[in-house]
Image 1 (cartoon, one colour):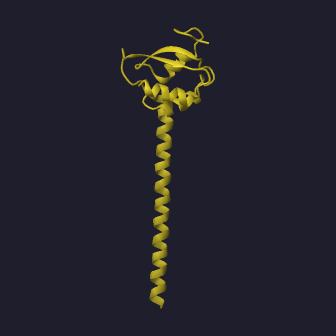
Image 2 (cartoon, rainbow, N blue to C red; image 1 turned 90 degrees about the horizontal axis):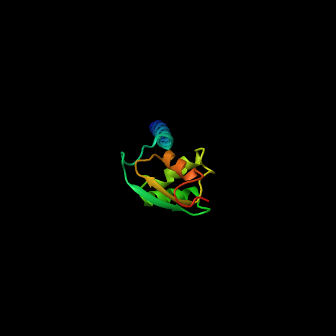
Image 3 (cartoon, rainbow, N blue to C red; image 1 turned 60 degrees about the horizontal axis):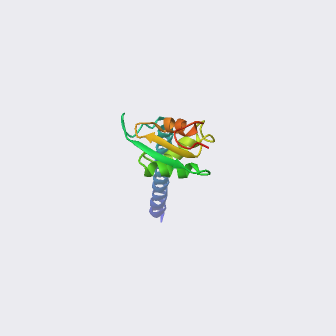
Length: 127
């Protein structure tokens, strides 16, 4: 009887330590993923080196940041549309993107594309 209590206590301790190690592992992985995402939001490079390829995109009035990101990903101007949407959301250009037709290049960074899409007079129809 006494031996079974000792074994049960040892198993309980082992299980507690195992759960603690798993929790620490999950927190470390989540922290690493959060750091990587934050780093990419502010330092994502252009897809290609200059001269790159010119692509024409048309932004409709009322497009959400996710729709803009998806469009740029479809046109292969950015690697990840959701990441672009986050970059736009955290930038000074969040409420300054205008509808119209723009010529963007694969050698432009996300910030450079935002600058082009936020200007008043751009090639095409800026409204």
